[in-house]
Amino acid sequence: MWDVVPRPGDKLVVSSRWLYKVKQATDGSVEKHKARFVARGFSQVEGIDYDETFALVARHSSIKSMLALSAQMGWKIHQMDAKMSFLNGKIEEEVYIEQPEGFETFDHELHVFRLKRALYGLKQAHRAWYIRINNYFTRLGFTKSEADTNLYHIMVEDKPLIIVLYVDDLILIGDD
Image (cartoon, rainbow, N blue to C red):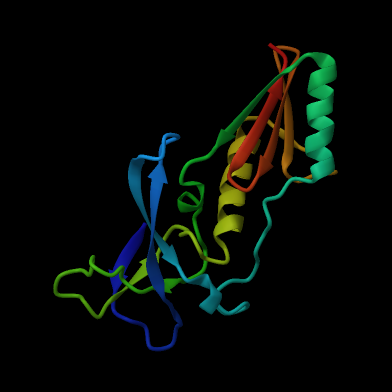
């Protein structure tokens, strides 16, 4: 995920923080405590820290059309969330981030992390995830729609399988 390196003098170091959340059960009791380490990407500068971003949002017309088509054809619909999706994207740029509070590396407290993978909050996290999932779908033989870059389709045993990708959620549509 990262390497601990000396602080570079000529590069911006992105600040970071912990986000804490209490997940509650339906009855209002505490189900679990969650902590997420995030980059404070608002400090990144376009052209220096990242070159391109990408919005992983399928067109509403694509989603509506696919849902209508599946209802008309009697196809099954399944929705899923890709857990920790933005942590799976590989980043090409040199990105340095402050060590997380409470987890400083012993004897290297003044060092920073050089990221190998995307992190929540980075400007390029969405794009890195999209490149990774797009490559995966392509290797599996899916074809990307020309009308919507977040809609994929393939024929499996003469039956269609359609995937609509939006942020870190997927809608899977297909015949039994």
